[in-house]
Image 1 (cartoon, one colour):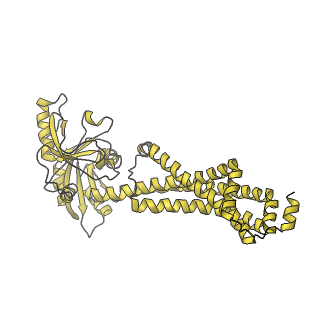
Image 2 (tube, rainbow, N blue to C red):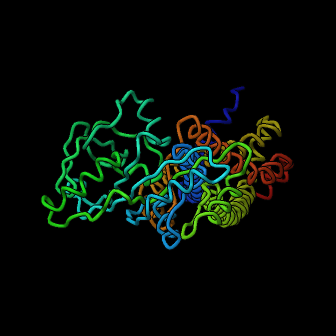
Image 3 (tube, helix red, strand yellow):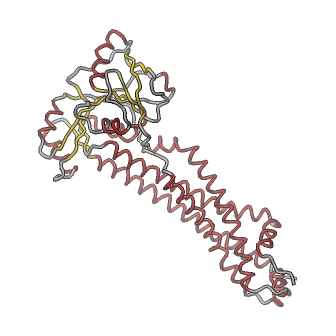
Amino acid sequence: MKRINITKLSIKNLQRKVIRSILLLLAVAMVTGTLFGATIFMTGMQNSLRIGTYRLGADILVVPEEYEAQARSALLAGEPTAFYMDRKVYDQVLKVDGVKRATPQLFIKPTSFTCCYNVDIFLVAFDPKTDFTISPWLQGKSIKPLGLNEAIVGDALPIMDGSLIPFFGTAFTVVGTMEPTGMKFFDQSLFMTMESAYEMAEHSKERALQPLHLDRNKISAVLVQADENISPDRLAIRLAYAIPGVKAIASDEVVNTVRRQLAGLMHGILVICSVLWVLALVMIGFAFYMIVNERQREFGLLRGMGAKRRQVLQLVLQEAFFISLAGGIIGLAIGSALLVGFQEVMVNTLKLPYLLPPPSVLYPLVGGAIVFSVLTGLISALIPAVIASRLDPYEAIRQGE
């Protein structure tokens, strides 16, 4: 007697009812694609926060009190901005107990930047003598310390090393490109020394159509590292109290605010995905229940030909497996395409940092999504499969006529 090939039989059954198979496949694809896309997007935001916070290297950002909102926006969304305060604030910060080290920075918003099309560029100047955010990166990339009118650029700016980029009538030579962080503050910024920035401002009066008004006693912010024996939050309060007219923003506070936003967003997405998953389970389960009812004669004949109960069970579950596996793969493709297509829109709308997770994180998520889709199909079809396996051969043939 020829042995029954359950796998071939399940594939033929799926091919026989193509429309129904496609509908079930799409149900699995919808749930898998939604959950996968949302998971990758959230993981990318958390990845960017982790890398960006590490790259910032500062516990506290001290800025003029009236420009707190602009400073937060510049840090998270990389929106070009320009505000200034007296350099004596830096000297006052150094005197506050609990400050381990501090460094000033200048924020400059260029009037135009024709080479980068629609990319908003942010000019950031730092002090090489005291800096602990940009300089360590230069050493790690084997780039010599920046000289006068030299700059490094963020990964998102389409500028090649060695290019000459003019700002306010001064041409800057690009000597390096930073690694991507997902935070526009780094990825869409051009970094120069403060001496270069001051020189640029001085020469802009003769060279530029719109001169940059900036004197040497002005800075935009002070980046602070807290001593080990004090928390950044406590030091921020101390700084704000000791220095009038400034706002001390703890980096943990900014990150935690974003994480709370992400948690709320993730909760909403999980609720939607849960509802979709339950609907998919019910729909697929009901579809397989109807399939078992209309195929009672087939199952009865299989039992009559010598098929065991476990083989009938295997037949139904294999059909569910093939549908859910194909649906999972299609869902991954659709979810990835939508994520890539709308990534920029979502990032700009939410004004949050984003960096695609590395392969070490991405591959397990892909594998987990496929396993999830397969389990969805198998769980949905389990009860109908058990019912099919327990049908009495004679009764099944008689009722199926």
